[in-house]
Amino acid sequence: MKILIIDYGLGNLASVRRAVEECGGDSLVSALPADIARASHLILPGVGAFADGMSLLRERGWVEPLKAAVRNDRIPLLGICLGMQLLADRGDEGGESEGLGLVSGVVERLRPAGADERIPHVGWNAVHQVCPDPLFAGIPDETDFYFVHSYAVRPGDPSVVIGTTPYAGDFVSVVRSGSACGVQFHPEKSVPAGFTLLRNFLAVS
Amino acid sequence: MLKKRVIPVMLWKDVGLVKGVGFDSWRRTGTILPQIRVYNLRCVDELFLLDIAATIEGREPDYETIRDVAPECFVPLTVGGGIRTLEQVGRLLLAGADKISLNSEAYSNPGLISSIARRYGSQCVVVSIDARRTVSGYECFSHSGSRATGIRPVEWAIEAERRGAGELLLTSIERDGTMTGYDLELVKAVSEAVRIPVIAGGGAGTFEHLLEALVTGGASAVAAASMFHFTQQTPLEAKEYLAARGQPVRRFRTEAGERRATR
Figure (cartoon, rainbow over the protein chains, first blue to last red):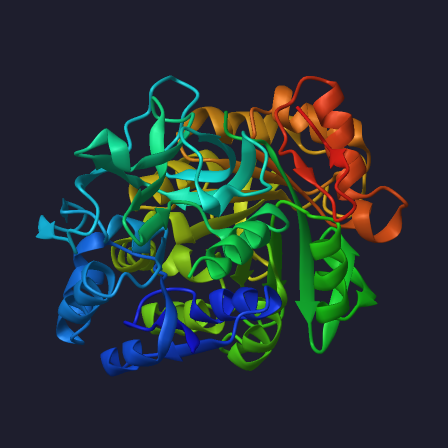
């Protein structure tokens, strides 16, 4: 079985693939939704605007197969950055559009909470672990990860919140709902803690 | 709190990495991949790889090389040099760049900043500004510092931000490679003029210089090259120095599980 990295035409696939390999995963970068059948784990990466991301997922036939894989087959899915945001119900970056609806919430632009805060939120910032999750096994609370984004998920249901980050009045940086989880930061670019997180994700079956 | 970043800059010319003084007198400093691996081990905050010959030679970015080296970089990698179109940006991102850095082309085609920001998000557009002091004040230079643009850095920074740049890399041409300290007046003027992060570049030689750029200059990050190539000082020690002086830098554990560079 493969670690399927979803290629929908946006994002940093080579880095994610290389990081998964470095963490011991057998990766497959694929643009074919049918490959979900060969996958033990799914990774939805992404860089870009929400509306573009969703329209590409729709055009390339990923939306229904992804929903089914998570809801019916409980395949672990990790959304990274835009990939996390696409798990939500809807977003308004680049025009309002509907998301995958796998995690209750909407995606909104960050609002600076003080004069020192600048958007996009770029750089290393802490993740406060709100509730224990296998993703963070062995990772100390308040560990820094690399973020680069202007939007974030505002959950509709507080129970999906795994981690928050102290910026723009505390935004939600890690979510989980069933087998779908999402991180707003880039684990593939956050050596060494990011690689621990990827290994933890691969260890969940 | 968002951490202040320490960013080694790799300048790439022909087949290897170089470092000069005042955008001239290039010395070879090694090859890309071994240097990326060293920086991975040292857990640097991010890396810049700038092809300083592409624009001058009228070349496109070297996608093949980026495709080879970018996935080996386990921290964010910003790639610049020779970028002229949205399509080239797409190819670089697919090759593994996390962000792209735009310089010369932005002056003649500032709409490119906006179109990259719209397509890929502001966060992946770094506008790189090379400036030097002239008789009439600071001026921006394109083509690796060789062409005067007649544009003032503060005005250009505001314009770049307005058009969607996510960050600015601001390099002082005359301080570059001298290791005598950043041009703090320039850094401060630009940092105060915009709300996006400003990365100070050009002139770092000691840890104190880094601290000055953050505190006096108001920069969000510091870039350095000569300091890391030609002296014994490492990015990790730089962060320990900054942390000890109250600067928020990232904390992490090394492979040995030892906690370093705590706040």
